Image (cartoon, rainbow, N blue to C red; front, side, top):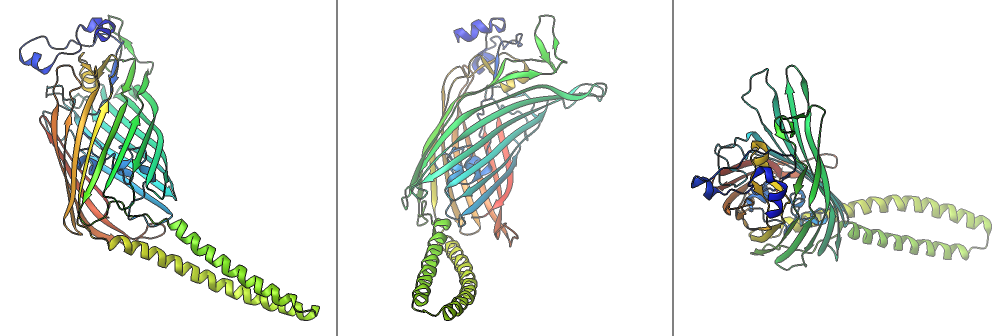
Length: 484
């Protein structure tokens, strides 16, 4: 606090609490310097909808593309329904954190900042080849900063993006998975007017490494997982239209340009337990290894056949008879090879169907419990996003904070409806602010079967809905995906 006060001396105080506001003490002063940072700390859980429904608790489970922002090991985690050597998963969801008024997104104790047209959406994909997994997922927030201006006035919009690019490798037949990569962020403010046209007034880009691990021994009802994300600091860039106010402060679209946008370091760790007859960690049958064993058996059979033929040819002394027999062997081998390839393809299809049936024949009744904690480090000389947009000097991220999370998932209508509930305690990143408890609710409803074509295997689709409710905050979301 002392160091922040020295650097931001002209701001006087960066940490007035909600309690001070209620007792009539001075409110935060306007930002009057460029020597500060903007902290991109995401208190409310904004993530793929299954993760939101579980209260953000997902790092120790870490399946599918939903797990990319929760655990860097997620891309190589093979789900029980993964039955191909090459597999993939796609993610898309949209939610509306600004769908209701009086939102206090930053949890600074005050409602009233208007997040106009606030939409959050995610796009991602995972590709798995054997034990290797590659994952990419981005989430984006976009809202209008000037929704009610006249047509001749300057209009501004803000886009915040976070990206995870990860690679992971599984060990011990998918019982332990290690992953790593980079997370990046960018902030982009665009402005437009009828006289000056449109352009990017301010943008920031940065990236830093992250590492993750997941341990899931075969046939035990638990998992443990953890991930570490390094801090991301990105320098503020701007176009030539930046103006200086009378105090020499550089401004873009009325905002005092910060030195950096900063995402603090994070450690996310916890455990998952599954109750009921459905296995949490069934032994994964590697399709590539299973098919390779069948191919090896075929190679052995062909080698034995060639050895028998060579032994017979060695006993024929007449060159003409030997040549005739070689030609007969060649014709027979050509026919046998075609037949063997057909049988091999049939065998591989049969093994794939057996792997699929193995998954669908497991009992579905289960209760999945996930508990974790997210530890977030401090941010130097920073204000929150809301303070940046409203240009009030309210200190954010002065201390390390902990976010406990808990999620429970079950399938009350077996084969048709899944439900999940969760809760988490959002920390107060502002000095004097308080923790805020969230309650989350989610569901999956089985819709229809898509028979598929090309590399799209037959799939059963589902509709997912979610809600996140807390004092001064509501979020709802919908997505379409695969039913498993």
